[in-house]
Image (tube, rainbow, N blue to C red; front, side, top):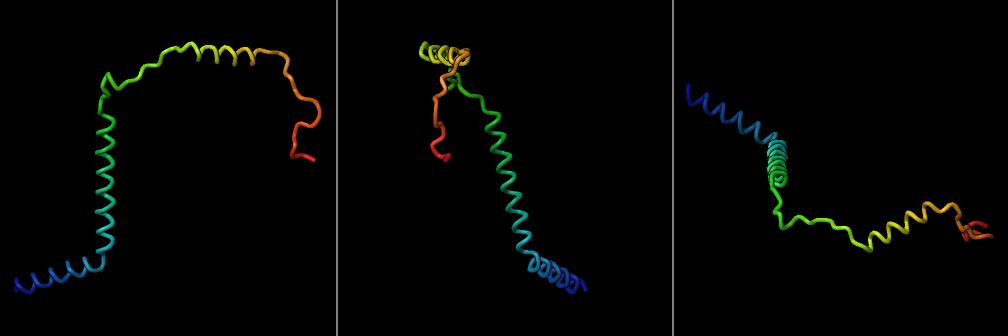
Length: 91
């Protein structure tokens, strides 16, 4: 009697596995990828950068000259708009 129940349960398990083998594979594959992504995200978020790798921004004199020119242009009240045809594609 036990061997019949054992064979029957084995047959049922094999039937279910044959029927849903692709679904089981996809579930395990997506689950594995999800775990890998979560672990990599935690590794990247928890890592502290070395003090040698951190770049510091410094005020450069050429950058300040450019900023001054932009501010000067924005503050100008007169704009030189060319006369005549301004859009070569419009006819």
